[in-house]
Length: 216
Image (cartoon, rainbow, N blue to C red; front, side):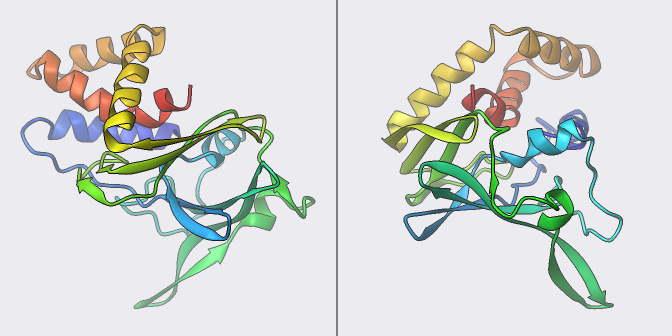
C-alpha cells in the first residue's frame, strides 16, 4: 500500500469516519487464471513501485476510486505470478479518456515480467457479492480463491466460502493487532482523532489495512 494511499485514507478517517462512511471503494487489479479473468483484491505492484518511489505521471488521471493511479493485469503462468500490463488513464480530448500502458516504462528490458519481488497472498473474490462496503476492498463475497506467493512463485492455493474467508480474515487481523505497525498506527489515530471511539478506530483499521495483514 503506497504512502499516498495511506495518507489519503487516514485523512478520510479523520474527516468523516464514523460520522459518515464517505470513503471510496477501489477499482481492483485483474488476474487471469486458467483463461478466466477475475478481480484481484491485492496490489502486488505496490511494493515494487514503493521501493522505487514511483508516483503517477502528470498525465495520469487519479480518482478517488483509484488512488494508486494505475491498474495492473496479472496472470498465473506455470505457477508464476506474471505482470501482463499496467495502465494509467489519460485524457486525449476535453471529454475523451483512454488507457495508456506504462509496462515498458516500468520494465524496459524485461519481455516477461515475473513478480519475483512479491511475497504474499492474492485475494481473489470469485463468487457473488454478499455485502457492498464503500471503502477499499471492503466488500464481501460468498466465495474466494486464495493464492500464496513466495518470490513470484505459487506455493499454495486455497478455496474458501464467505464464512471461511471471514474467519481467516479475522484471524489474520487479530495477529496483526499484535504487531508494532498496528500499535503505532492505532496510537497515531487515537492521538489525532480523540473524538473517535476505540471501536470506530479498530473497525477502520480492519478495513483499511486488510491488504497488508491478509498478505502476511
